Image 1 (cartoon, rainbow, N blue to C red):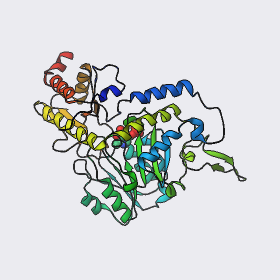
Image 2 (image 1 turned 90 degrees about the horizontal axis):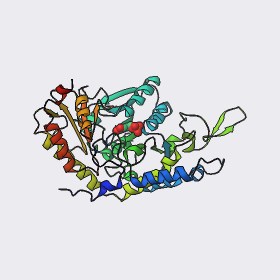
Image 3 (image 1 turned 90 degrees about the vertical axis):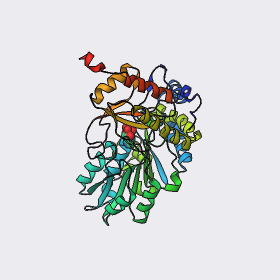
Image 4 (image 1 turned 120 degrees about the vertical axis):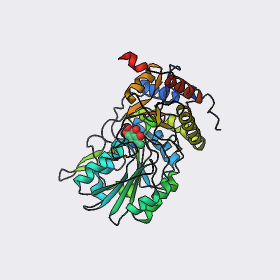
Length: 399
Ligand SMILES: Cc1ncc(COP(=O)(O)O)c(C=O)c1O
């Protein structure tokens, strides 16, 4: 049994301790130190009106970029600040035509978040690139199956490290090595995994990897794209504006700044970016192997408990999900379940949860997602169990 992280919940912003937060798959609680730094930045570093010089210095965001460089041991990649994982993926998908040609193929899986699905679909279609969507084994990429779907035309594979639904750990190292052997670009969506699972970036060495602050104890609307320098150098920015160009050449063409600034047009969320350094420090000190095992233990404990309630179906049974349980009620919609839990101070999420409708494991049906992180406990799961078990025909009474 993995011991709970001692008093860890006190490090997070959750004023009303009666609230049970089971929605970390959407966004983790914010670290108190991060919020404190965010407030400090707002109060003390009002918008920089200086122009020219080093942007990171001017905007006080260099510490965050340096910490990312150190934590990931980044050497041959640029660290590009974006507003979230979605915008990072859009930037690369928009540039598919810079690295692939008409008739080439890319591979996605059936368990990608819509964010790691829709941009590839849109731009691949525009550039006449074929998209192959491979089936997973209940959310886990089967390497044998993946190999069988790779053709000479396959030029890029984009896949999650942990999905937003099944939260199983894909063997990203094996997939990236396969990509390297076959000259295929690798793109890792690590939005869910960064605060839960160890990522030895310099060892796996993907071409691209993305994370979001919101899922890593930071504040929303900030994400990071790690992109191999020699690839991203030729990319076109998706957003054009200030702070990303140096003016015009003689032919009235924009002269872009170098990457990463070329891809960071406009005003940034500087207080947010700067304060994320606190979340990064916290994550770098966590024993992520223990975090992973603790989250698997919570998920399995939750599944065991809820399997005693006859009207609850557990969708992700018999797999070691890292902090996620998906359920349906035989009698009530997931929306009713969600509101009932909310009335009892338990916060989850429900619906399709941005799973793409190619996911046969979800079967295009809505469900309730209960997702955990290190601040959750078995006692909270006991409360969930008793609320669901005592629910009876609560909903009928409200009609
Ligand atoms: C696996 C995965 N990828 C991508 C995203 C999109 O992230 P963002 O909302 O930061 O763009 C999410 C969000 O839930 C996710 O879980």
